[in-house]
Structures are given as structure tokens and as C-alpha cells.
Amino acid sequence: MRVSDRRAVRSRRTTADGYPSAMLTRHDRGSAGAGAIASTGAVEAETRPHPSTDDAGYHAVPSRPQRAFHVWAAVGFAGSCGLAAFGTRVGAVPDGVGWWFSLPRGGSTVPGVLFYLCVCLLVAAWVGVGVRGRAARLTTRQAWFLLGAWGVPLVLGPPLFSRDLYSYVAQGLIAHSGANPYAVGPSVLGPGPVLESVASVWRHTPTPYGPLFVSLIRGVAALFGTSITAEVLALRGLELAGVVLIMVFLPRLARNLGTDPGLALWLGALSPLALFSFIASGHNDGLMLGLLVAALALASEERMTAALVLCALAMTVKVPAGAAIIFVGLGWLRATTGRRRLGALVRIVAVPVATVAVVTWASGLGWTWLGPDALRVPTELRVLPTPSVAIGTLFSHLLDLARVHVSRRATGDLGRQGGTPPEAELHRIPWMGGLELLSELGKGPHQRCRGEHGDRPGRRGRTARGRRGRTSRA
Image (cartoon, rainbow, N blue to C red; front, side, top):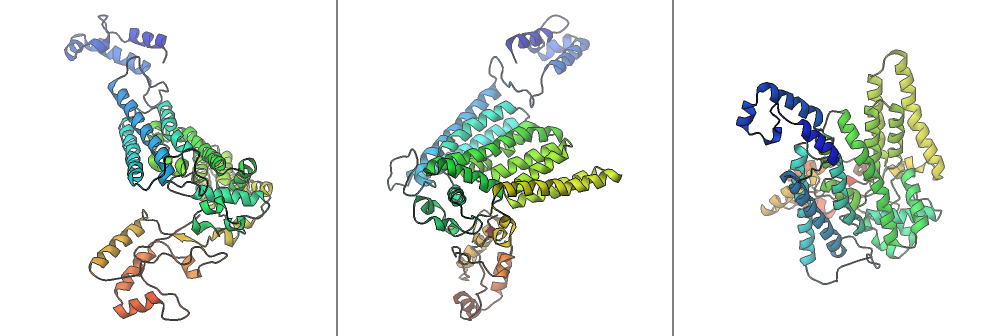
């Protein structure tokens, strides 16, 4: 709000006696007359902008909540800078190449401790800002400010918590070389910094991503293929495009649904989970979710055709996003009747199919991305934050204390080239590990040992995997 506008508002906020309403005490307000106070309140209601839609968000004299906001923003900035700096020691730095800046190497564990201290700082800052967001005082402009303060250091730092960015680099190089990334894995690149930087479990795995994303990373490889660091930064730019879509369309979706936009941005774009996954780790989920949020925002404004196009584009980034087409389509069908419903049904089918067909044709990669080999990535990982894994790990430790030993080996052959797990393994879901654990307890010790060591030929041991959970790479 400009100075002249504030003066105009201040001059109108007066009582019948000519005193500014902000200067009156409770006693003075009572003596000023109910009619004067009511008229003052009406003027204030007309002139005071809603806190969640006030893009300025600043006053001439910073209030105490504003000072607290700036303090928490500074704390989060310090945490992000620390993550970028100490991440050069404990992060996923390119093997044999290093990052464009780094701390001195050494055998001390101090950088690791400080790294996680910075994680705590960023989480604390997010919680502190959340107090403002819960009170509907976090504006859209302030959310953009926080994204810049907390996100830019993570953009410039090395990949954290994941090496998937190097898988994207390798898949882009494969596509740029003319090979089919849906048929071969990064191992075809041969020994070198790129292959060494890819997580070992993905080195023989074809890409599971859609043609739009593969085309984008192929373009990045064509422009920056001589530098791993440059490619990583460029790929982060793609994910930042998804974050920008979230920042633009999430407030629109929140307003259309009657929710505070600032609180929605605090939860959906500024949370440490979003910052770490979309920016620090550079996962392509950021681009996929940005397209989906934009689609939902347009669907809430009854722009269904555009929403279906964006859902189909998200599907060509990661196939599971195609489920959004079903939900948007059902919402459209419920809102129509009669012949209009038939026309809506035709467009619900035709628009996504046409969009996917155009993207697939333009990519020149064919339809193998929807084949069984691409949809069934032959690798599984153990992820401790998964509830079933966490519960299984807890019970495994408890059973160890009781001297009841069960198998703790990880999933099968993670790095097999061209291999696929047995069909029974493909359809297993995470909570099956818990059922196996319970069934294992009903066996005798000799049965557990026989299954664990695989004495019976031609059959894999069905032992409890208390410390194992699976999340398929999708």
C-alpha cells in the first residue's frame, strides 16, 4: 500500500469527536458513542484489506509479528545456506568431479552434525512462519519472498538426500546419443563420472518416466552435456518450473475452495518436505505436481478442457499422474446432465488421448514408455519413513532383544541387468512384510533357519523381512 493510500485510510479512521480510532482506549471508545464506533468499524471494514490477499503485507512501522516473520525468514535462510555448504561434504556430490564450491575435506564428523543442525533450523523456521500462516497473516508476496530466501541456496548447492538427478543426467545422455532409454539403463554409458554418480541400484534400470520428461532431459543433455554440474543445475531449473506452477496456481485453487492462500502455500510449497524433494533433491515430482495443481485450479474454475490437457501432460512426466484424469473427468460428469454429459464424456476421453499421442509422437521415442517393461521397474528399495518399514524395524529390534531372530536382508537382486523379480514379488505391497513377520513367528526355529539359508532348491526363502519395505520406483 502506498504512503498516500495509508494517509487516506488513516484520515478516514476517526471517530465523531475527531480522534483517530487507533488512539482511543477501551474507556474512550465507550464514551465516544456507539454510533461513532459503529461507523468507524464500517469504514475500517471497507478500507482494511484482507490479510491473506494483501500483497504488500508491510506497514510503515514494522509490527511485532512482522519482526518475528523477518527473524524466522533469516533463520530459514541461514539453515538453507548451511545445508548448501555442508552438503558439499555429506551430500550427493558428483563422484570424481566435485561441486563448483566445497568445504575443505577431512575425516571429521562435525560437518555431518552441522548439516542436520541446519535441517533443524529450516524446520524450525517453517514452523515459526506457520504460526503467522495459521492466523491468516501470511501473504502471497511474503510466500514468494520465503521461497527465494530458503530455496535459492538449495538450488546452488549439491543434490541432497538423493542421487536421482544423476539418473536424469544419464537418461538424458542416453536419449541424446540416439539409444532408447526405455530399453537400456545408465550402464551403457560405460565407466565415468556420470555412471559413478548414479545410485548403484539404478545403473541397469531403464527410465520409468514419460516422453515429455525424457524429451526435456534430452534437451538439457544437448545443451550442457559436457558438465555434470551444469546439467544438474539445468535440471533443477525444470523442477523450479513446477514449483513456480505450484506457487501461481495453488493460491487460486485455495481461493476457489474458500481456503486461505497463504496457509496453502505454507503447507504445499514452503514445507521442508517440498523444499528438499523438489529443489534440493531435484525430483521430477515437482514438475508433475505443478502441472496437476494447475489442472485442479483450472478445473475448479470450470475450464475442464485445459485441465485435462495439463493432467495428460503430467502423465507424460510420470505415469501415475494419469489418475488425475479420472478424478477431473468424474467431477465434470457429475456437473453435467443430459446431452451435455455425453459431450463431456467424449472430451474426457479424447482430450487426454490426443495430448498423450501428440507428446509421444513429438518425442520420437515410441510407445515403449507404456509397455510392461517400462511400467514394471525391476527394483525395490527399503525406505525407513514408510510406516510399514518403520513398524517392521521396531518389531525386529524388539524380537532381537527377545533373542528371536528373523531375516533382515534387503530385497532381492537390486542391480540385475535386464532381470525382473518373480511375478509374486511384483504384486506384493508394503504391508505384506508385516504379514510375513507374523507368519514367521508361527514357525519353529529350524523352519526359520531353513528358509533363511535357502536349503530347499528352486524356491526362494519366505522369511520375515522385518527391516524391509518396498517402494517401487514409479
